[in-house]
Figure 1: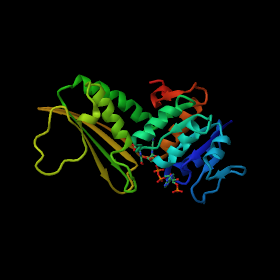
Figure 2: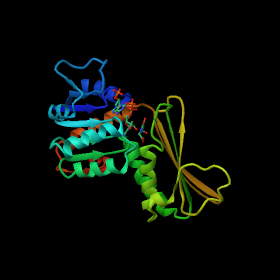
Figure 3: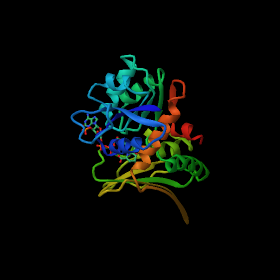
Figure 4: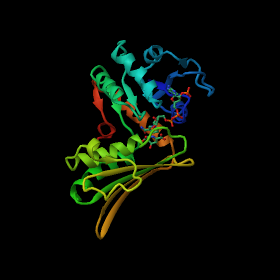
Length: 257
Ligand SMILES: NC(=O)C1=CN([C@@H]2O[C@H](COP(=O)(O)OP(=O)(O)OC[C@H]3O[C@@H](n4cnc5c(N)ncnc54)[C@H](OP(=O)(O)O)[C@@H]3O)[C@@H](O)[C@H]2O)C=CC1
Ligand SMILES: O=C(O)C1=N[C@H](C(=O)O)C[C@H](O)C1
């Protein structure tokens, strides 16, 4: 049995992880990190702690669906305090410092970072690379839609999709990304990649990558209709990651894509 520790255990996805692990045959919950209290019931003997060191010490692998500052303290536990457990990181919205910490942690332990744990989005990333390159003259625009509670924008998934689109055209995403248009800003430039966000209701997650030209366009859509797509994907990733060497892995590595 693989013992899993959760960071973000009181959250929307974290609480689904608890449910999924309760019925899994190969992995079980061993520890939950909380900031305050955990109201959800967990198996007897589960360690519930606000101490990252205790969390890391009482599991075989950590799954993190939390907030950038919380992930930061998890990464610091590995980089600065010698924690040794593999990390599945699903949190989005990191700043440069947090991205660097993730890289540093991956030199010490196996780290799988994926802005989207679904199989569908893993394949969509591939399709976007292919389409963006083959349709080099088409305008690329990405729209993401999420529930009203999402705090980061654009979504991590949309940024990853945009990264694939840009890289396929040898472009630097930071130089060509446009997230928001308002006022008399002029016509669209050839290389720009639009990444726009919509927030409302209970939308689990929808991403559309459009490639538009005169006379034709393609739109590639992915819709997550159930949030446990992400928790189940993360558990699949954790089972794979415990057998890997230190390094930074993507969801595609885990899925063999
Ligand atoms: N890669 C993927 O496939 C997916 C990634 N995500 C990402 O996972 C993250 C969590 O999503 P979701 O479960 O919807 O979010 P929630 O807001 O429901 O949960 C966030 C969790 O993080 C905890 N938390 C950690 N640190 C802090 C802090 N400093 N301040 C406040 N809360 C903190 C919260 O604890 P407390 O309750 O005590 O405040 C809570 O348990 C997001 O970054 C989201 O984008 C989401 C879905 C899929
Ligand atoms: O916050 C969410 O809900 C989600 N976040 C991830 C992201 O930012 O891409 C993945 C998924 O779309 C749901």
